[in-house]
Length: 58
Image 1 (cartoon, rainbow, N blue to C red):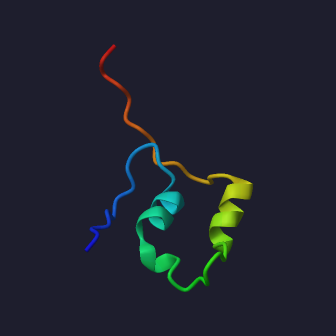
Image 2: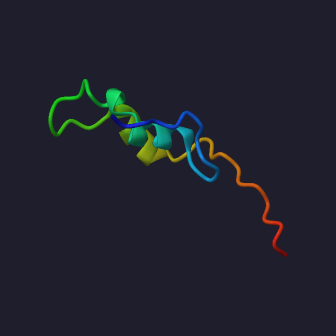
């Protein structure tokens, strides 16, 4: 069984993260069928990226 993280890590797009780690989203697609949401996302870009925390090293 695969454990899916519910929180999107910093620096990642929530939609990309969810579609990459939740197999149930693409389960309804036929073999070799593209996900319309993923295709739209690839064409139009990421609307929101989870911000990273500032580095305190410097």
